[in-house]
Image: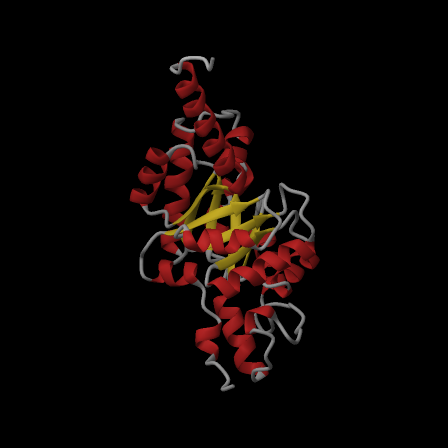
Length: 274
């Protein structure tokens, strides 16, 4: 079988959307541990999914299985890691992720550490492993494959604290950071406006982050606003381009609640059986 072109193998739907000035839409995976979720996300029209192991008990093995399934389905897998430790960053990438979401980044120093763990030399210190899922387990010329993996691996740093917001300009300036991903839930909590998503401080945070991203050629992501499409639309209009549209758990709950409501309404209008 002829060897596939490396440029084609290492597709990153999110990077392609952002480069074209389009919006990339992603779903979070927190509940479903089986590989079918990747095909479901693809069928539903998502560009990407991210396995949120910061907020679930999924194992690294399960995370890798979903990443591999997503690669096969043509949907870009990211992983939100539970910490900034380099062993988490490099291992989820070795397991098949095309990007890493780093939580609670508060400084340029922390952002640089994430980039260093995610990128191969000379841009970082990620160890060179063979037989990567992203390469479909084939052996390509090392120099070329490392170069393209560095280019196509997306680094998302989460801005979800007053410290992160204060240093957002410096974080945006870090080479290798691609997306400043605002975690609106945690940001509101840390700003003392928990749950007040329409508070002026939230809009100010997005405006400030989007302005910093533009100055440094980066992009902004929207997190924690899946139930507020009007706010998502507002921040996309301001310039945000990566949208977390919700999680598998929230979709299941919403659909199950709606179906139960419809059935109960129908039954309430029916004559009792005799």
